[in-house]
Length: 190
Ligand code: URA
Ligand code: SF4
Image (cartoon, rainbow, N blue to C red):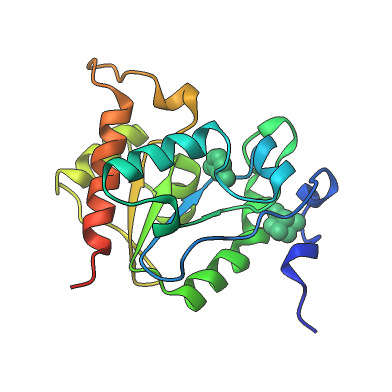
């Protein structure tokens, strides 16, 4: 008997959610993977519809991809209480759902939106996450793969992260834009 994904109770996040936020968007091409649903996602049952989602939509659109041109999901599908970070046992409990989507949808590129998604989908790195993203975009380290699919990590688009500057003064969103540009380019059919 397979579990209905909309009724999963495999981890404690099921206790406080209003609904499971299932993946949405076109099958194939580019799949954005975020951390977890927030308040608006939990209320509407759709991923990336809050401020972080609008920031992502905007930077995608600037790269020529509208909301109906990319797909979205998260490493956990239920909203953590008070938007706390998902715990490792919750991420582990939800892992098979994400793996199944990757097998079924076979995206050409995964865009890991934020450090939590990158930790789930790429090997560990040393130093700061944003420096790591910079090194990947500069080609100093090869782009990681997950289930054979290239993963492009980017800064999280929540306003707290997105609107800040890095210690060298550069805007975090500029790094994010470069990551999205790379992901969009890699996702083009060849
Ligand atoms: N909305 C989501 O669905 N995921 C995030 O990571 C952020 C906002
Ligand atoms: Fe199931 Fe994932 Fe929701 Fe946990 S977060 S209850 S594993 S769907």
